Structure formats: C-alpha cells, structure tokens
Length: 454
Image 1 (cartoon, rainbow, N blue to C red):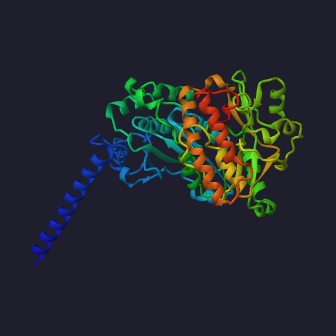
Image 2 (cartoon, rainbow, N blue to C red; image 1 turned 90 degrees about the horizontal axis):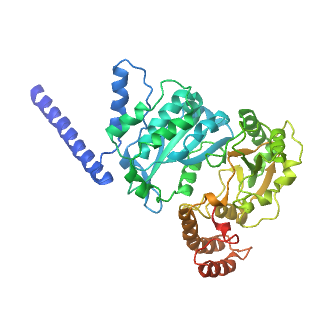
Image 3 (cartoon, rainbow, N blue to C red; image 1 turned 90 degrees about the vertical axis):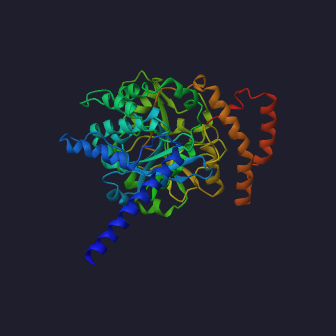
C-alpha cells in the first residue's frame, strides 16, 4: 500500500513538472516569437551562480516574468511594475511626497543625479525594448554599487513594445558586464555611453524611429508611488538638495496644504549653461546665474509658453527664505501651460493616446484646469536642467510625432468637453482653424505652430 502511494505521488509530481515545462516553452515562444527571453528563472540562476562561487554579488538582475505583465489600453506595450523594489520602500510610505519619473535607457545616467538630491521614494519607469533591457540591467548594477540611495529609495518598472520585447543575448550581456568598473571612481555618464556603444548598428534602423510612450511611462510611475502627493518631472530635471526636499515634505504636512484638495504647487524649472561646473544649490545662486546669463527659464527659447503663466521674472525678485512657502498664484490659465508641480494623487492622469512628442503635458494640465485645480508657485525650490535647449535640436521625427498627436487632439477635446460639460477656452473651434493652417503649411513648422511640439 505504501509503495503504491509513493508511486502515485511520484507520478503526480512528474506530470506537474512536465505540464509546467510545456506551458513555459509555449508562453516563451508566444511572447518573443521564438527569441530567447529574459526570465525570472535565468535572473535567479545568474545571481545564484555568483553567490555559490564565493564572489561578492555585484551584478543585479531585474525580477519579473514576461507573460505576467499587463498590457496598456492600446495593447501595444507590456508593463512590468516593481522589477526592482527599493529596500526602504515600505518605510517611505509615511512621507507625503513621491518623485515619479520616466526615462529611456539613453538618459538613465540622470537617475544618480536625481537620487543624490532627493530625500524620499523615487518611482522610475524605464522604456527598455530589445537589447536596451540588458543595458538597463547592467547599468543599474553599477549604479546600485556606487550610489547606495538607489538601493534604498528607487523602485523601477519596465515597459516595452509588444513587438520589441527584452532579448537575452549571452554574448551581449558578457560584453556589458566587462564594462562595469571595479570601482566607483569613474564618471557614471561615461560608463553608460560605453554601454550604449555596444548596441549593433542594425538596431538603429528601428530603434531611433520607435515612438517613446512618455505618458504611459508617467502614469505607471505615478500609480506605483505609495504616497499622498507626487511630483512628475522628466528624469533630466534635477532637484537641488535633500534639505529642500525635506522642507517640501514639511510644507505638505501643514494642515492648510492638506485641506486644499485641488492645489497644484508649481516648482520652477531652469536651464543651466553647460559652461557651469555645478548646479546652483539655492535660489540666491540661481538668480545670480540668471543675471550672468548662465541660467534661464526652461524652454524659454524652444517654447516660451511652457512656464509663462508662472511669471518667473517676478519669482526671481522674491526674496529667498528659510521656510518653504507659496509665493503667489499663477496667472490666468491658457492652454499651453505645462509646469512641473506637486499635487495629490487625485489629479487627472496623463492621456496615453498621445505617443511620442506633442501635447503630452499640456493636455493633462488642461484637464486639471477643467477639474477646478489651482496652480500656486512655490518660492524656495526649483529644478535644473543641464544645457540650454534650442529649436535646432528638435528632429524632423519629433515634429512628425507632434503633428500625429495633433490629429488625436480633437477627440481629446471632444471627450473632455463632454466629461466636464464645458469648453471654456473654445478650443474645439480653435482646433479647426489651426488644423487648416497646418495643412496649408504642408507640415512645415513655423513659430506659431511650434506650440504643439512639447
């Protein structure tokens, strides 16, 4: 009887293993069209082998199972939340504020600069198609070794197109691992540059044309924040110090701020000349740089409407104080306003129909306006962006994406006018006039039409 029971149990175990193996192979082939996928199993084995060899585990691997991700609304992108979880994530849920940001692999080096000057949780969505996934994994391994705050503060999420899922190339991976320095004395920007140079040339035939789904990325970063408030800058918009971050948290804990459920607290953003050796640590230093023409309002050359309603020339003349405070309210709303702000998580999400560049931020701000939010300019805090932005840096592909998004814009306006039962700026009528003008110009961008490019 015991022997029969043993044989029956063994049969069940063996059958389960065979069934699971067949399912694993079937799913693998379906997701990647018979390409080799980065899996949770390979990630675990890689780490385990290093530990068994007695070496210090310095190579971090993201943990997720490809077919357990979620699709976006368009069914074109796969999302895997918490491929890396900050060690202190749970303890940081009690803080008011979370920084939510997004990046492609090319800009991932800015993460080290952000975390160096931020005091709370950071939720990062990474666009990682094809071999970019392995670059992200190798580079994050290096950052984790050299910037301890990344381990404790940063949680990462992986997003990629269904048609270009992560690829596991052992040769490519080995080449990347050889580029990880043994020490932290190297410039982390240059380390990433060397890794990016490992990408094969044929990858650029499709990679550079691949639309960047920034609103999907922004929403994932926002939704995975564990806090009451969020701020959603681009990853190359750098905070100035952890001290200012602490002051901002204390400001948000004030009962007056908590009671204002639809207040968006605007953080000014400035471009810093590449001739400057370090970022300004306070408003006094920043305003001095502005007078020396080593700093200017973000996008003031590319798209001056970006922060125009914040009236930052007035802000620059407001005296700096030791306490975080609201300096004044933004001017009367106009559509093209797109500030960086702190708000409660009840703020409208970004519209994910806008793929690539064009109308990604200002449409979200417009919905906040329709929903009754007010924008208040903070006095003693700002973000910086290295390098002056110029129109010449905008590619023809970026302009095309903007015009493609403009075609979607009409449906967006119709939906919001129905949802909120109003069109206070008469944008639907203005759209028709702008659309005719753009068609007559044969998609050539003039100063008047350049407003849709951000």
